[in-house]
Image (cartoon, rainbow, N blue to C red; front, side, top):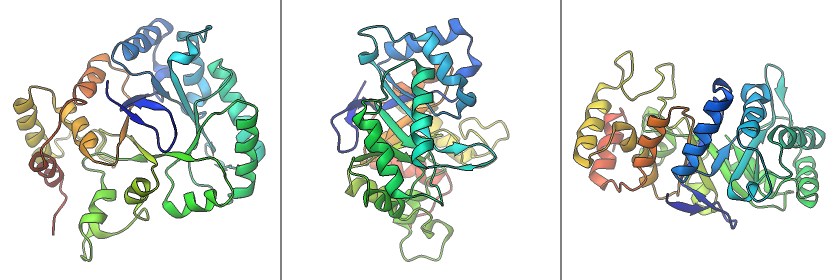
Length: 308
């Protein structure tokens, strides 16, 4: 498994991480076997959030992977907090500390390798977040910090008070859902893709040494769902090109879609949310494929994007 340095920090992480949002669908024995499979494939990075299964995903993980002495150091645990479903976002000091402690209890571990703020909070007080981060770091409960779904100006506002490096921004990114790329290509054009919806977050993360973690990497980003072999026949051209390249490289279409993300020089880390072993293997098979520029742009155009 290839690794990258996480942001400007010291952690070396695999380019494929397991997103644990669906882990609650696995029975205990299934979860044990799946985590073992992940480790066998070189995936020792596990991404959680306190809202995944209302905490059940974290509990299911810890039961399947007991944090015995010497074992905890073999994996990297990341979780997120800040969303209260159906109510509000909360980035207050009290909530962040309470949420982190709840995560640690459910995961049955003394520390998190990374804690992310899950969504921007309109009522965010950067000073409070800084106090929460300082307390969690000082106590040894959280070693590194990051954000999810934040734009550059929001990260800069955080950095006004937060002394810790922001190592990660977790963002939705796939071949069809790639306005982060389109806005940078359709410069000075009056087109849908030219709209800057994220403050040039992709370029910003590269400039600031922040790792982009791609969530929903095989989703279309709309109600069409998965773009690979879409059940409603959406993205026919993209699937044709994926199949052509899959035949060329001797892998699956999923592997090619994985390789497309990893080909970008932003040092993307893929958050793979599948609970299917075969699909996970296909995702990992994309790690060692270096798509040519021609192949990369061919896929981009097949997804419906345009070039000037």
